Image (cartoon, rainbow, N blue to C red):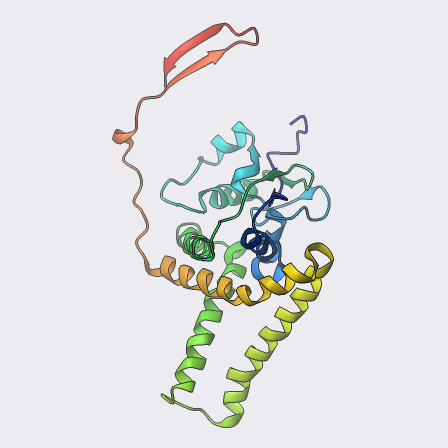
Length: 257
């Protein structure tokens, strides 16, 4: 808080040690490069204190300097989720400094069931697409990969149903090669997870990774074509009274805001 070169500071959101079995598998998925890319730093204490971006910071563990928040216009209330990602992008583009500190962590349980976990990823994908529609930037391009994976799966399904079967060479390059590359990357991710998560959880999480990409990818396509909430009606805002206290505990103000 004393540093003048820090406008946004955050750290990881870690899975508690007493989490259930499925929750521990979700923690592996959240902390894997193959499923979350650089955003894995939101769920594991990765690296050292460093300048960062919205890709590594998460709203549940975030400090934003008030001046930076107000100068960037605050949250885009038409976005949910991803309202914090759009805000941090605007702060970054405006010259603000974002920092990631792996030692500044909180603990929070992941979703409890596979269905709720995939639903969360669906919402994340939808939110990212809507963020891109309202605030286009190159930072969201990497998040389009799962949407491409969904298109690839539909392509393979279309060929397998005999709707159209291309010449063998084209089928090999457009069907088999991407699939083999995907399996290879999945296997490498399992090996990379071993030092941190161990054999049992690393292997247990592996079959769930394709589902992560599918859920996020479908959500992304949904966000590309779905309706974005309109700007909130300012007349519907509730009046809020802010009580300000001085350090001695004496009530100093009670004014509507």
